[in-house]
Length: 292
Image 1: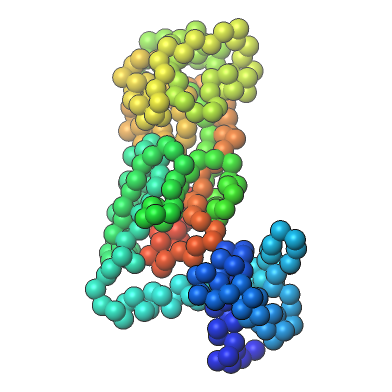
Image 2: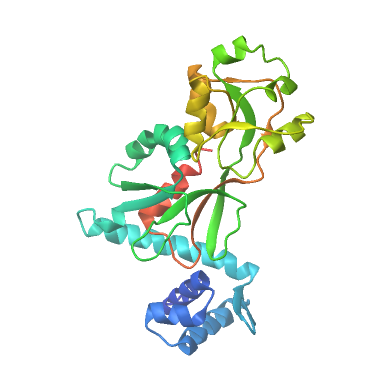
């Protein structure tokens, strides 16, 4: 199908309405009335011969056909913004990306990979914010975030980044000195804990070890601190695979006997569903999804 000039404004109205899932919000963005946005969408639906939105009492939602067109339209808009930015000359705010993520993941997993991103996108400047609270995307906040969670958050688009698993680790000398050869042996040793939602109770149950009472000798708010305590010989820590990988590779920690417990939560890249990613932010998302 050839889109004539008069349908380009309808496509722009549809793309905005698809991002917001709301005609009134799209109208505010485009300086149109909600009725005008609805008119543009209906004109596009008539031209294509398919319904792009399901209309119901609580608002609108995309049909399968609407989702296909929305994905394509969003990509086309981002490409045009990228070209327009390049034609304007010097890199500006559009070439800066703010990423909110967890300190533990930044230090052990993301940081060693950023040189690859820098080599591929030398004109994009990154701002990395490490925080444990909910990310504020509005008012000059982050463009996107990397989070450990269930994968569904109201108002956010979430892309699965990678799974994770829990298993016990200790310093090599500590493991040798205490002769750790079974999961049951771990229960009687000093245990190190962080504030993750899954902990020693979950792992011992998964390992088939009945433990009447678990005494956690050291508790840390950050996972990297818990692993550092284990590397210093203070006890046994319950490690997440992605966070412990560098210390295991360097021999500062060793994995102890027992099964790996898949985590209930995984890592996701998230950003507001109603806001189209700027080209630089889209480049970061496309890149990081290749790193899993």
